[in-house]
Length: 507
Image 1 (cartoon, rainbow, N blue to C red):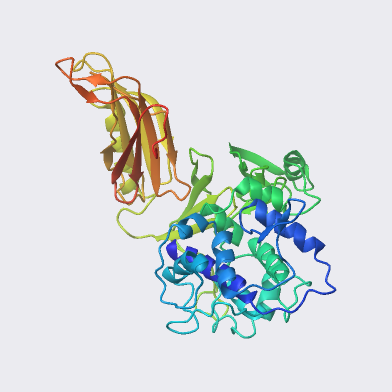
Image 2: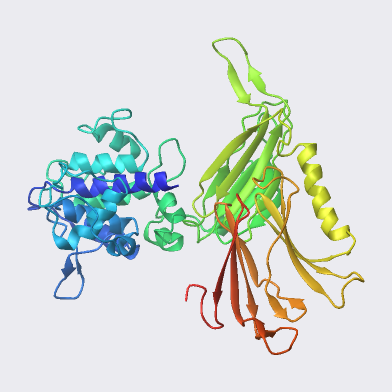
């Protein structure tokens, strides 16, 4: 993930650096760029150089940027200004003005710039439009020298949609940087792995709802209701078999009726207002390529507790290869399990293929049996626990239970994590999770449990309303307050944070 952040930073930094050289804006109408700058400002991605007499922001769109101003603009565009501002000077350059030291240090520490020499950053110099566009292409994961050349990025930039017609390549101003930056937000990353805005949303640099409001996908977007009706009542209606609801949209499993070659399983998402691209869009969630003879269907479909992540898989016992051994050979799908994870906020989907033929393959009887046995042991074991609540994540199940057996007076609360097939912790591995005492002989129950959007961790918290006394009735063994826990689902490591009642865990 850090590599992706650096790539995004590099590309945006290049954008900023490219703003250096510019001619006068004489004769250019910058009204539309002014509006775009305001939208970027609303997302915290672009700031002006001061205020006009009427109190509005002065974006200084009619002039170029110096290299140090460009770095500052980049850091702000990535939502890292606070982090950068807190840094001490670490860069080796002797020509950087004091006000820019922290921003240049951040860029240097993150591998975003090497300056113009070992000791010179090139402060006060301007950057060319080609440089700025080059860095933006790098932010989209393109590699200069491989996908394009640094001195001629224009063809690829236009193909990627980050070079609007109004951009002045020769006299590149702050106005042109605004145009390129706004266009890049909706551009696809190399390989179709989502958009730059999607990446920034995932990294927490921009708010998805605010982005959707600032940059709707089009002016004639449908409402959620209109898109749903068009999908299910159109010429080839989509028949819904199962559905999952989240703030970002509705995920549907079903099939189209009236298709020429017969109906097969399909996954669709109808977006709601919280989706980064706005409401009323119908997204096709990917599935492996199959021919008409295949009957494989999506399995293990699950929506995370926070409603942001949707996971599913498709398993094939054998590969399907057309014209194998010939120059026209085409692989419909490999043997194994295709595991998909979709960020419903951005629409980005990533997948991995777990190769078949290995002991403990996700979805095979060995792992599934281990998982089922572990769940059964908790609910049907010696203590005959009663299930209070269950949370399902991509790689684990968490059970909140109470002991109703005869070995304990009263009820005792337990929180257990069980690894699913494919979990780094191991299928069927059971991990008791800590709970604070709510009373001398009673554990507190978690108020909420949330899986992270990337499926790598979970968090939960418990409120303890009293100072819990020990056996002597005087000594406090559990202070009242909020106990927050974070579990690393790759290692099983648990970290705890405490805050007095009425305060957050961060103080």
